[in-house]
Image 1 (cartoon, rainbow, N blue to C red):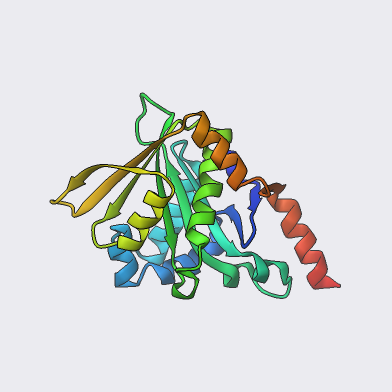
Image 2 (tube, rainbow, N blue to C red; image 1 turned 90 degrees about the horizontal axis):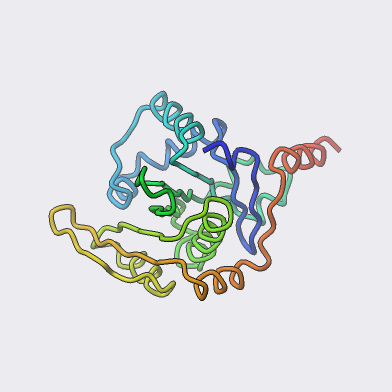
Amino acid sequence: MKINENTLLEGHRVVLVPYNAEHVPRYHEWMKSPELQQLTASEPLTLEQEYDMQKSWREDDDKCTFIILDKKQWADSSVDQEQCMVGDVNIFLTDPTDPSLAELEIMIAEPSYRGRGIGKEVTCMMMSYGVAKLGVKKFEVKIGLDNEVSIAMFKKLHFQEVSVCKVFKEVTLEMTVDESVRTRLLDDTADMKERDYRQACSDRQKLVSQ
């Protein structure tokens, strides 16, 4: 999605940046993991296919993707951006007849970052962005039945279980964005800053050169 190609979102512990070609090698290494393939219901791709996928996510109007970076590492200009990567978060506009319906996906790929509340922070940031910038009015998540941690997190965020598919072994949860949800999201992300991504990278590069 073009709308976020120059958008950086800064939270308490994470920075969300557009998914660029420089991120693909690390992402490709992540997706060799059988565990992540299972959790994301993904098939392994070649590196070339991964680059093609990155381009499609950037160009397609129905996908909005951010790469999750460790904010503390990102603040250290001597650390390559690729080494700051923690995971990714996506919004898919799944119904052409209803652009206000979005499927949300989040992956914390680095095991050492799981169980630390980062998934919740990123989810709230992405939902806030989806509501404010994309006009999302209903979020949907599909999670493998054995991924109890993710199911519990989304239920804590007030998502409601709507169906279980035993064939695909997944549960679907939904949240309708009413005024109370909108207010809660604004409160949860009150400190989130939206910045110019290219400018932030340029400023970071200047620090490296000094």
